[in-house]
Each structure stands twice: as C-alpha cells, then as structure tokens.
Length: 147
Image 1 (cartoon, rainbow, N blue to C red):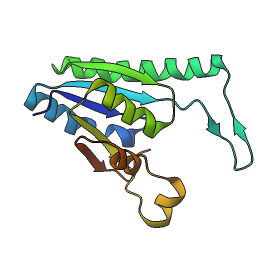
Image 2 (image 1 turned 90 degrees about the vertical axis):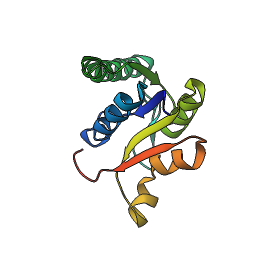
Image 3 (image 1 turned 180 degrees about the vertical axis):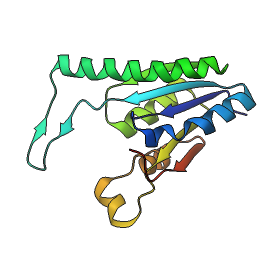
Image 4 (image 1 turned 60 degrees about the horizontal axis):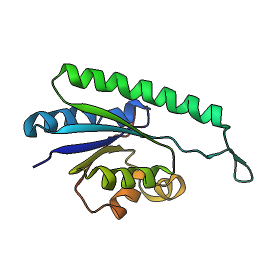
C-alpha cells in the first residue's frame, strides 16, 4: 500500500511523536521513509520587521537540520527501515507539498499541535495547509505538548 512515506520534522519532540507510527507502517509495508526538514529562508522578527539571514546563517541552519535528520535516519536504519534525508529551503507548507509531489510519496505523516479556534487562526497550521493542498493520503497525529 505505502512504498514511500514523507515525514516532515521541525526538530521538536512534538513533531517526532509521529515517528513510532511511521516506523510501524514502514515495517508493515516495507516502505522507505524520507525525513524532511524545511528551513524557511525568511524569519519574521515582529510585525514591522523581517530578518533575512545571510547565506552563511542559512547554510548553518541547513547543516544543523541535516545532522538532526541523519541522527534519526541512523536510528531507523538500525531498525531495518530504509530512510533518506531531504532538506528544502522555502516556506514550510510549500516545501512539504512540493517535496511530496517531486518524490511521488504515497503518504505524508506528521504531527500537529492540535490547536483549534483563535490559536489556529493566529499561529496558522502547517498540517491544515498541507491537508488543503495535497492530493495523497495524509496521516496527522495530534500532539499538544513536548516542544
């Protein structure tokens, strides 16, 4: 059923709560896992300012993201799950959706903050953004704490 699973991670323990679910699915279906981190090139500082990191700062953030994903990749491989690392520098929802399409994944699996109402409107929702744009199955687990 699933041959390739995309797992967007942001480095938080909350996001990592999807991993046991992904490992179970990957083992059951013999699927390969693509671990994705999207590093946004523009970071808002306040409503009046926008900070654009220099090329060196972005490279450093991408390097840290790669190290983080490679550590998870190594753990998965020890469990017999084929995993690869993928990094993208763009808006998060765009990065997830475009990567899913480019890699032709069969499933996107991710954790959500589980915010509703005003909190969701104020903070936005990556999961909701992905849900509204993708044309493939999406597994979302609700994770309210841990990062």
